[in-house]
Length: 85
Image (cartoon, rainbow, N blue to C red):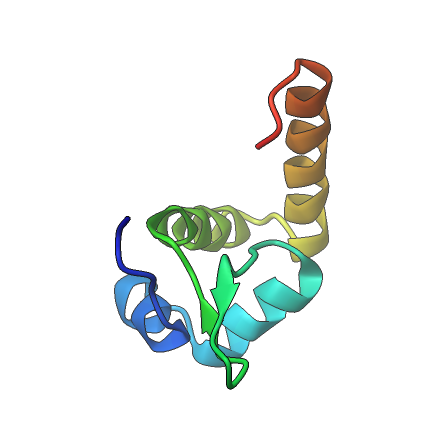
């Protein structure tokens, strides 16, 4: 299994501020895949791509609410097709 990334790693790899990463988590745009015993969030490589996508969509004029709706719509479609993730 690949090593999990910290919030600081996400900041470094995506150029997005830590406060923005926290906002994405709170809005449900990204999910940590684990937490340390002290409560620190851990992410996988997929999250790096997702944060970059969110950043690009936001730059293109989509609000975070619209991005969340797009993601939820895609999730429901996948679920209806029998794909869980």
